[in-house]
Image 1 (cartoon, rainbow, N blue to C red):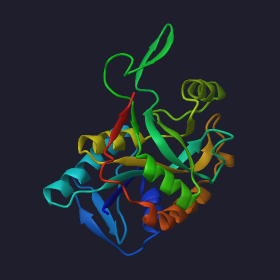
Image 2: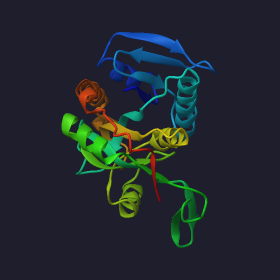
Image 3: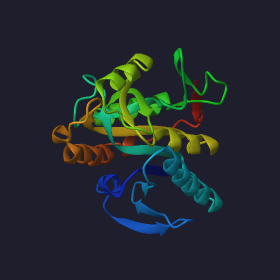
Image 4: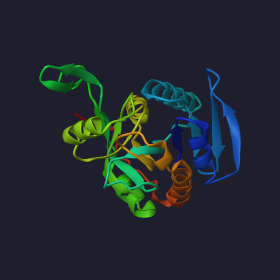
Length: 238
C-alpha cells in the first residue's frame, strides 16, 4: 500500500520519518521535497489548510503522472485536544475531518459553508481503517476539527464543543489534505498527537516533545493496520 503522509512543519515530518529512518529525498514540482521511507512518503507542506491542500495535491498529481497512485493520504502532526477526551500526549484518529470555521458569522450564530450552499465542510474517514488504526495505536476516535485560527480562549473552546460535540482535537491542515485526497478519489484520515489543551493558551503546559514522540511511536505501530478495502473511497459528510 502506498501512503502519503502530510504534515505542516519539518519537526512533525521528522517525527514520522523517525518511525522508518531509511529515506530518500524526492523533489516535487514547485520546489517541495518528499521524504520517502520504507513505509511512507512524507511531506511537510506548510501551515494551514491552503498550504496543506496545495502540497497534498502536488504530491498526489505527481504520483498519478508517474503511474504510481497513492492508496491513502494521512494528515498527521500535533494538535490541541479537547478535554477531558484527549489528554496531553495521547493520540486521536479521525472519524471525520471537519472544517470548523469555513462559513459565515450571522446574527443567529455560525453557519457552515454547507448550510450556506457553498460545498462540503467535512470528510469521513473509512470506518474499517479508523478502527484498525485505533486498535494498533490506542488512539481515541472522534472528529478532528480544522481551523485557520487556533483556539486561545475558553469561550471559543466552548463554542466549538457546542457545535461539534464529537470533536476530540483541533489542528490547521486536515481539511485541506482531505479535500485534495477527495479530488483524487483517495481515502484520507487524520492522526494527531495532543500537545496542548484546546482553550486558553498556556505555553508552559504544552508537551510538544512528548506529542512528537507519541507520533513517532504511532507510525511504528500502524503499518499493519493500513489496509483500505477497495470499496471504500473518499467519503464526504455535511
